[in-house]
Length: 68
Image (cartoon, rainbow, N blue to C red; front, side, top):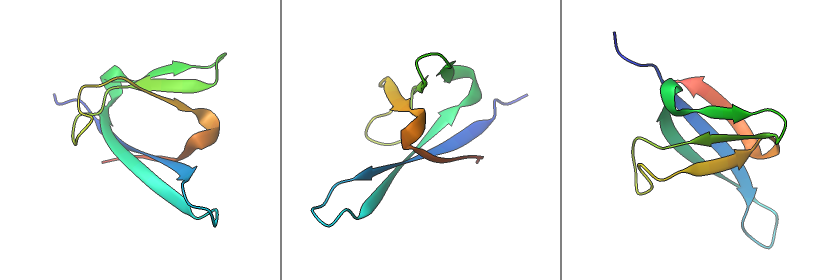
């Protein structure tokens, strides 16, 4: 049985006009850690430039999470 993969999209404001820019990562359900009390998730992207590097995203910065 294969592990489920999820896409995590976050939002951040990067330009002077407040335009929302979305970043997205693909991760596995087995490598997501939810820190409820600290209000963030920890994961290791499976693809892209940051593959294998630990990421922390605050709940408030998560736009959407869906199954790939």
